[in-house]
Structure formats: C-alpha cells, structure tokens
Length: 449
Ligand code: TRP
Image (cartoon, rainbow, N blue to C red; front, side, top):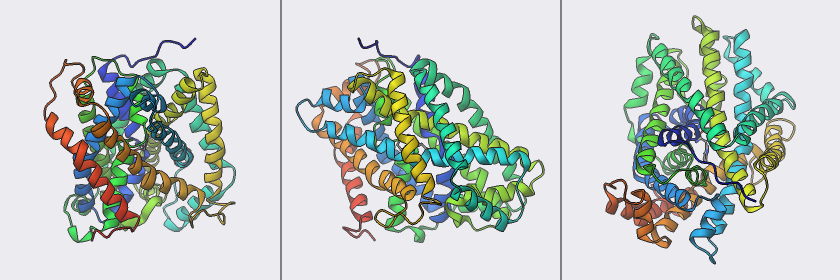
C-alpha cells in the first residue's frame, strides 16, 4: 500500500524549501568566480536578463507540471502525456540529478574541511594555501570522508520526509544563512580599497561578452535556480492546490539573485582590497578567501562563519537533488522512502568518490578530455540542464493544454495571473528559441558573435 503523499505545510514553507534548493554552492562558490572570470558587471546583467526572461517562465512550467500531477518527474510526464515518449525527460532528470550530486557533494565536503581548518586558522601565504588546497583535494581519503558526511546528513533529512525533514531543515538554516551573508558583506565593505570591487560588480564592460560568456551566464542561471532537471517539479508535487505558485516562483528568483549579489558583495570587494585578481577561478573560495581571512582581525571566526554557511547552503541543495531520485524510486519502484534514499545515497557514494579521486589518484583518467569531476559538471550544467529546460518549456507550451496551464498558474482560479498572454508567449516561442540558439552556439554548431 502506498502511503498518502506528504505535503509542505504552507506557502511560506514551499518558498523556504525552494530557496533552500536554489541557494547553494552555486551562489557562494560558483557565482563569484564566474563573475570574476567573465569580467564582472556585464556578466551579472546578462545573468539578470536570463533569470527574468527565461528562468522565470521555466520555473512556472516546472511548478505547473509538478503540482498538477503530484508525482515524481518520471511519473509526472507519464501522467500528463500517456502513451508518448515524454517520460524520457523524467529519466533524463533523474540522471542529471545523479550527475550534479556526484560533483556537488564533493565540493560540499571541501567546505566541511575548511570549516574545521578555520578553527586553527589559515596561512597568510597564498603559495602555502594553494599547496594545501591541492594536496587536500588530491588526497584519497579525507575529501571522500567529508563528502560521505554531507551525503549522510542530507540522507537523514530526506528520510524524515517533506514536512518534517526537508521543510523543517530549511526553516532552521535559511534565516541563519541570510544573516551570515549580510554580516559578511557589511564587514567586507568596510575594508579600505573595497570600492574597486563594488565598481567591478556594478559597472559593466560589454566588450567582455562573448558567446562563451552568454552560455556561462545561461548555465549559471539554470544551475542557481535549480532548473532544468525536475528539482522544482519534484518539490512542486508536494505543494497544495491553494498555494500561489506564481508568487512563490517570483519571490524565489528574487531571493536567489539577492543571495548571489550579496555573495558577490561579500567576496569581490575583499578580493580587490587585498590586490588579488578576480579571475582566480574555482579555487577562489578555497585559496583566495582563506588568504584574506588570515589577514583580517577575528579572521578565524569570520572564516568559520563563512564555511559553515557554505556547508549548510550545500546541504539544503543536496537534499533537493536527492529528493528527485528518491521520489522516483519510491513511487515507480514502489520502495519505502528509507530504502529509496539508501539506494540513492549508495549510488552517489560511488560516483562521488570517483569524482573526488579524479582530482588525484585518477587524474590521468579522462572522458572526452575531461576528468570525471569536470565531466559531471560539464555534462550537467552545459548539456543536461539546457536540454532539460528546453524540453520542459516545449512540453508546457506545446503539449500541455492551455487550460491546464492557466488552471495551475491561477491555482484553480483562486489567484489572478498577471501577464498570462506574455508568459505563454515566452514559454511557447522566446524561451525555446533562445535556449536552442545559445545551446547550439556553445556546442560550436552556429556562430553567435
Ligand atoms: N541551485 C543549487 C545551487 O545553486 C544547486 C542545485 C540544487 C541544482 N538543485 C539543482 C542545480 C537542480 C541544478 C539543478 O547551488
């Protein structure tokens, strides 16, 4: 016998859980270094345009599919388009979740290591920090242990269910996270020389925009909002009929962008104040920042707060990814929630360990010229998410009945839907065309600039 389906307790609970999924390493670790490597403000503007023009309609679409069907991603497509091949998108989503978890949990594990290291304090010598970082990520045991710890904590929360596990966890940690990033941003803005970093973040240099920048901004916006692979579909399947999904989507997008900009403000001005190049890349959070913390009064405490924040931000995102796979196993294979989570976590233990080892012991092993870790990241962010997002908008725009779309967006007529025609137009035409063009140009099949 299947248990009756669990639900989020309120609209605010849905909001916190979706923000919990959206706000994660994508905001704290990826966004600042992407802004740094892609030239600052121009990239941020592109990113904002993508969030409003493309991501929001996709988020609506995911909410519509999930809430309508009250099913896992695979079941959702099967219910809405029976007898067609659309369920394939469901399987793709489950695969994408596994791909993301396989590198995400590893980086989440690094944040735990750095949280602990910050108790002792960091060296103020960049060379030493760089060396420590590489020897840590290349070592065969510790990173894997921390990744297991993060995975284990997340699994326990997911086993607890939607209302008593996921929603509760997000209710506890999200306010803490907000306070933390505001505190850090304010602290950093008081550093002498911080102004240059603020200028870098807000004064655009459009000559920096290339086809690659456009794709990077698109990939980042999908990644940061947890779009394109059924994460929101899955959470939406636990949303009650009364909740206003348009409002939740809009507020979530604002909150996520707000977090990213605050993270940028907490990091870039510090980078400039200490005379470091912003284009440091993925090691920004693990080499550059510890170096800065080491030179600040009470730097250890600040570093601890930062890395603890990073860890919990990763945690609430990991639980949303595990839920996609676990919901699929529970409902399609008729397993208990507990067994489904254990199976999911066991898969990630293997793929995650491999991707961690690809930094060191398995460095020589490459697939299409990329190590395992980079391959999972590239596959998910640059291929599966855009493809998934494209399929989702095509499905809602062209396959799903328009009355179903309206019915869901208005929560069965309970709420007014402003800009309905415009939203439909974007979902039907603009979003699919834009994603296709950007995607093809990134693969080098057409030339944008
Ligand atoms: N959005 C999260 C972050 O920014 C990561 C994440 C969670 C994600 N669920 C997702 C990314 C689904 C893509 C798809 O860190």
